[in-house]
Image 1: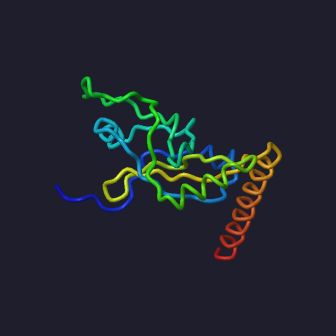
Image 2: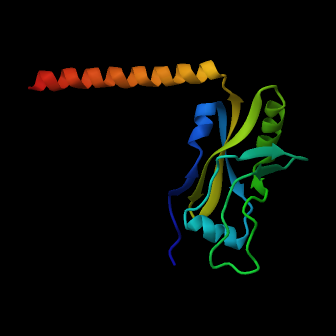
Length: 159
């Protein structure tokens, strides 16, 4: 069997970018059991309620839902177990110091395979207030309208 190359996205947490202001991102490996890997290869996972907790100089991924493998036997994993993240000591220390500041948290953004290995993209984030979310949406809509107007003008000039 040929070795996989590139990045294959499994799950993405789009709501995290809406609810949080992303300050810094990290790529971490995951410690998984065999049935978890097989379930992920089928493209089944959910990061919606996931968060990262730092405990004793180790990073743990909580509440990420990886459904049980359909052909698994008694060796099957539990769907929402906590999973250890593989990060460098420097990255863990940096995350630990930053996450202790008020309003900061660590959330998973994406789960993917990179060259055959399961990886998770985590982010140090600060929660947005309701008015920040509205302002972000307004800016996005304004940008879309400006692009539509520009493309309409260009279309008229060509005709």
